[in-house]
Image (cartoon, rainbow, N blue to C red; front, side, top):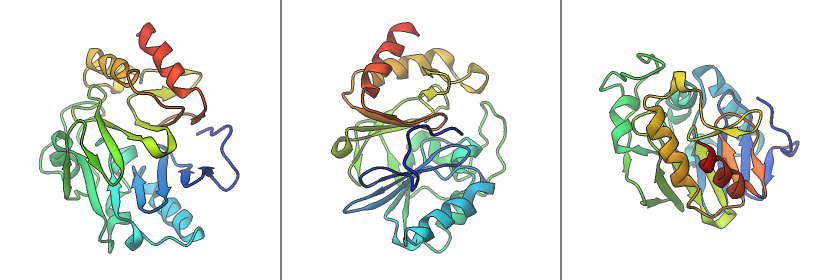
Length: 218
C-alpha cells in the first residue's frame, strides 16, 4: 500500500499512527490507546512489532475497533488480542461474523479467521473511547467508520478508498453497492479535515471536501 505523505516514523498526525499493512491499521495515542483494524493474519506480527518499537504492549490497549469482518481487517485480531484485556468493539450486526458464530454470506465468501468475541456492540451515533460510530453499511452488512473530533479525523474503514483518487470500493467486494454509495453520502455530512482509509493513502487537510465531491458523483 502506498502511503504518500505519511511520516517516516508513521506518526502521521500528533497522536495518530498509521501502520502500513495490507489494510491500514490505525493507532491513537493520547489519553487512550486505541487500535482500529488488525489487517490480515500475516500482518499481525508487523502490527505487534510496530507497537513494540514505540513501547506499546497489546495489554496496554483499551479498545480494538474492527470496522468490518473482511479478513484483511479482522485476520490479525486473535493474535493481537491474545493476552490483552483490550475490549473488542464492532457494530452489533458484524459481531457474530467476527466471532464466527454466523457464516458471513457476502463477498469475499466464508471466513477462516479465528473467531474473537466482540465485547462492545456498537450502534450508529454511539461514542466509545472518544470515537463516534458512523454506521456505513454496504461494503459489508455491519461496516462502520469512526469519527475522531479531537483530530478532525475520519477513519473510513472500507466505506471509501483512496487509490488513484477517492472513490467507492470495488463492487465485487460490496455486499450492497447501492447501500455502499448511500454510506458515502452519509460521510459527506460530517465535517473533518483528515481521513484514513483501509486502502490507499491517508489525506491530511481537505479530506472532507474530497468525500463531499465523491458523494456528488456516486
